[in-house]
Image (cartoon, rainbow, N blue to C red; front, top):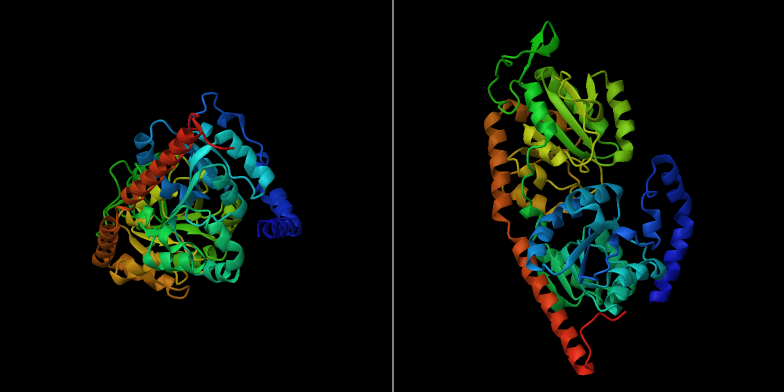
Length: 468
């Protein structure tokens, strides 16, 4: 099976290489960390003292955020272990380095033995933790052969990927048998994992780690925008500073008289829809400010051009600072890592990837701040989460045609907005606890691994060590 998989992987890589090369040349995508992806272990990962290692893999920003709290709790419980983190995307890499230090973060190798083995030899992990759904057959097989225990945490099988997994169950099932423990987000995810080949006795439900996210501290951007927006007034259709503050309109308490919409994680095809909705909002609320945060950094310039062509005054976050005035219009959040805290400014938060069939994005970052949340109809990647919020009337679902009246009606109804935000925060608190359950399961897995290594060492009368 593994030979067939490797042959297919090589063929797929060869056939798709023109696409990767084009993206690399046009956007710089995948260029970063290319050597690491091909198996070159960076010098920063090598440590002469050979501390036992826990290897955590988180694909991108969402997974890094999900496992951040887990790692923070795990480190003091396993003080003798070094925890290293791998990511696949550039944005995930930047966030992980910011949170865990560059010396502990690297790019995940391609799923070929020549790329994976150097990392296993250098790190000699005793535990491998994979966030959500990264089932790389060669990596899982080689990790288990090295002596590591393997756990998949916050596991989920999306509506989009489930049919594909079922079609290739013959290839996937042997790889899933290399995993010692699956901690699923929901009962439905557990059922799907078993259906595609995971051993039922190894699959538990621990909940969704993302519900345990802690609200971020107020970022410099949020503080600057609050100050700028609460010290602005209109003068004959223009905006200028006013040290005494703008007159307060009932219902907009976060930024003076300015209604603020934060449209986060938008994808291609959505910004034009959001712009049309914002034009309708401005007819009733001319002082409105919209903050747009595209999901993918390589699209920042493209979205900036779209905003410029709209005729609405706009700013780019990368070119704005607190010394410059800001008022009604659009702020393009063309930076990484600031969106989560920016939801604190919002009267309404629209979470993207949902107006077009991309599966949606995480709504919990907005829920942390008690914000009224709006999503499109395509939320398959977060089906259970959105269903939970929808059942409690804590989220509004609107398609492209409904988005403008939805924004208008919510901005006009302070009570409805506040009720939505309060319910969202309540659901977030009520569903916390996944981190504690996950930690208990991982500690048990580590204890089993240590006991097994000690038993082998005693049997062979050598000191415990990992096999290579």
